[in-house]
Amino acid sequence: MPEGDTIAYAAHRMRPVLEGRVPDEIRAPHPRHTFDRWPSRLEGRAVRRVDTHGKHLFLRFEGGMVVHSHLGMTGKWGIYRGGRRWTRSASRAWLVFQRGDDAVVQFDGPLLELITEGRSRFDQRLAALGPDVLAERFDHDRFLRRLRGDDPTRPIGDALLDQRNVAGIGNIWKAEGCWEAEIDPWRRVRDVSDPEVLRVIDLVRPRMQLSAVEGPRTIAPRVYRRSGQPCPRCGTAVIARAGGLGRSPSGLANAGPAPRPPAGDANRRTYWCPGCQR
Image 1 (tube, rainbow, N blue to C red):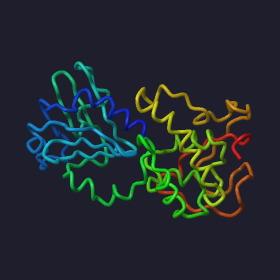
Image 2: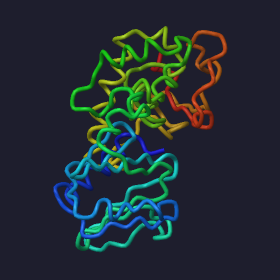
Image 3: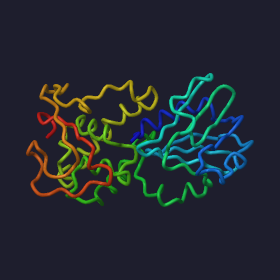
Image 4: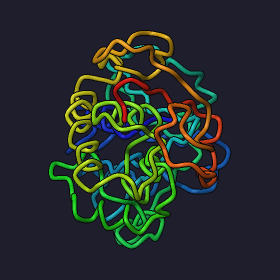
């Protein structure tokens, strides 16, 4: 699933094409939007702002209309300048903004909706989100309140994936953040101090912010998908394990069964260094 930096990077690339401008053409070719009349409802409206919160992207139009997107596991925003060929089939396009030879296309996303500005402010799904890890000023106090209200027996790695605690961190940055802070991802939330968990956020934010501007592919992972390779900090072989159940194979987490991770997390692999992540 695209993480917060990937969504922010898409927004960063959209802005020169759409922000402050009226699209020449808007198409909603997917059958599920046949009767939504999105093109006619947005025709002639300039895009005031493109912004993100965690894994959610918003295109805010004049007149209080907002396109809200969440890509899930399958979706993608494509930005094609100068008539460049699309990287996915046109049959998979759900929404197309054309401006001259430039196109902004949303493919395959499970959540794509046109809502009002008022609804975007009061929608309970959005209100439930934790503070955005990529916000210019991260709300540390709100994050700690959310985290300390979570299940204290939950592994810290799973808690960081929960968008109600902090919005924008996925499996990649969970692994990278825990590595940066030298914390075993299977340590229980109750066993991770406030300074330790804030260290995870504060150390991972600069790398995510750089990725949001330069692109995720420009940021080399330290442990993610590096199973069997030496840890860049201590040289111990990085290990991986699927899911988030049970105690840490390093033996450093408290004994006892861990709670079931959120839906979709069970098949994800956690990467960490047993030598320096304590």
